[in-house]
Image 1 (cartoon, rainbow, N blue to C red):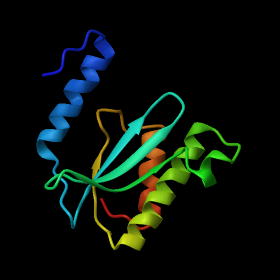
Image 2 (image 1 turned 120 degrees about the vertical axis):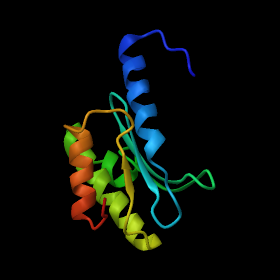
Image 3 (image 1 turned 180 degrees about the horizontal axis):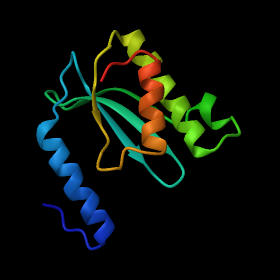
Length: 121
């Protein structure tokens, strides 16, 4: 187990590991992993059986980074983008991995935008 000194990071790490025990991504139903930094938000669709990333999207991509918007609006745009990319790749169902973050704010906006875009989870 990873050694973490900061209490907040350790708490999130414990939550993350308890979530990951029960969540596995496959080729048909990949794991939708979300990472949130202070400025950006990143999403990946991961096949855990092969250990490969199928798709990814982030707030640093051209169409999103150029727009003047706050972080919650950027999260909505990233959710829409990952849903579009998944449709093109033929993926409809995913397993949502919030990565230890609380389901509110940017994480919630990203998930709702992905659902509106056509992803089922």
